[in-house]
Every structure is written in C-alpha cells, then in structure tokens.
Image (cartoon, rainbow, N blue to C red; front, side, top):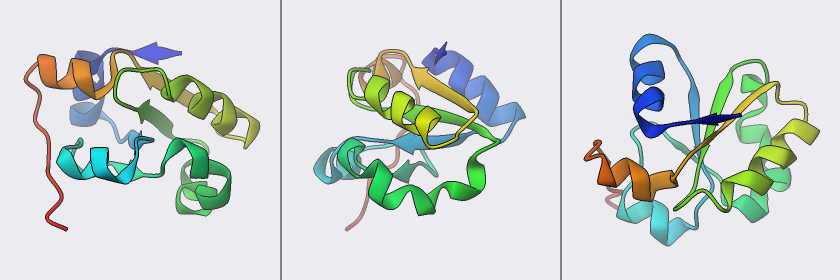
Length: 106
C-alpha cells in the first residue's frame, strides 16, 4: 500500500501512525519527520524489537525517494506487521511539499 506525503500529514493529525525512517544515519540527522523511528533498511530484522509493539498499528515507511522503502515494507510484512504503507516520493517529496522536518542535534 502507498500513501502520499499529504495524506501522511492528515494521518499524523487524526490518527497515530508510526513513521519508520529507513535511511542511513547521516541522512536521518540532516532532516526527518518529527517523532520518526530510525532503523536503516539493512537493520530492520536486527532492530525489529524497537517497533514490535506496533505490529497492529499503521506503519508508514519513509526513505529518500521511495526506493528503499519497498524492500523495507516487504520485510515488515514478513515480520508480521499488518498495516504497512510506503510513503510515495519519500523525504524528497515531503520536502518538495514544504512539510516540516526536524534536524538531529547529535
């Protein structure tokens, strides 16, 4: 399933989706969606315990342009997550729509 950045904002305002950012640490630090959980795409299986509680919740997966999100979504489905969404266009699209980002201080 896919979801647009604008619909993601609507869901953040009305529901409680989990934003899972699967980019690398350097990309995440430069700017991410507020309250996003960061697990690089290659570490999902090793770090799934960080998000195990959210198996029944909406999980919106974000990367830079949408390419890394697809395998991450497949992986999450295999790990038992029920409602996984790929945010189309990734952070690139999020920023093009002038949506707010948070930068890490570390």
